[in-house]
Structure formats: C-alpha cells, structure tokens
Image 1 (cartoon, rainbow, N blue to C red):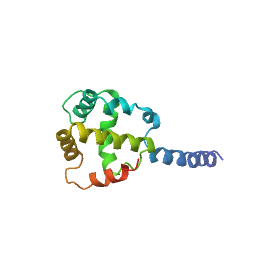
Image 2 (cartoon, rainbow, N blue to C red):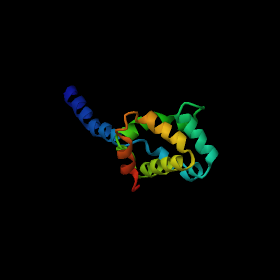
Image 3 (tube, rainbow, N blue to C red):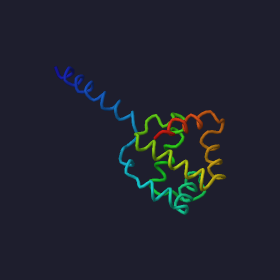
Image 4 (cartoon, rainbow, N blue to C red):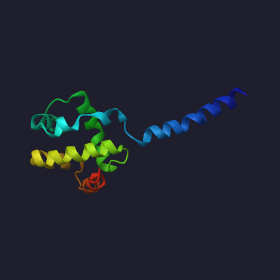
Length: 125
C-alpha cells in the first residue's frame, strides 16, 4: 500500500516538473527593459558581460548563461515578455554597438545556423 501511495505521488509531480521546463523563470519578466535600451552606458556594461570583457551583474550572469540556449531554441522557452525583451535588447545592441553585436552573434552562433531563426522568432514580440 505504501508503494502505491508513493507511486501516485511521483506521478502527480511529473506534470509539475515538465511544466517547469517549458519556460524560463518569470521573475525576470518585470526587468526594466526601457532603462537598458535607452542607456548606452548600461547597454555597454551588459554587452561587456556577455562578451567576457567586463564584470556581470547578478541578472547579467543569469541572462548570459541562458543566451546560448535562447539562440539555439529560438527563444522556445521564453514567455511573451521575455521574447519582447530579447528582441528589444538585441535590436539595441545592433543599433548602439554594431561591432560588439557582431562579435556576440559569432560567439553565440559560430556556424551561423541559429541566429537568423532566433531573430525571426522574436521579431513579432
């Protein structure tokens, strides 16, 4: 009887675990994107973090770790807010820091297989 109860408990947690894997943590959905994209100095600091050319803020480290997967999966686990965040951030990088943006693109997608698909996936966000 104990094993049946344990087995049922395990089965009940499987959907929860699977659901957690579908999207990134929503706590970053409220990140102030306006401050980032409208502040060239702050934008540069995040770019330096992503390129290993400067220190990272705690949030910058989280984003940096997720970036390769975000590019490869075309932001597949992103919430709508996170897709918008990604689009606006990379648009600002292209506009304000074009040379560093090209370097980041090469770092994240050295064989140029995923980045264009990523941009298309977040373009309407």
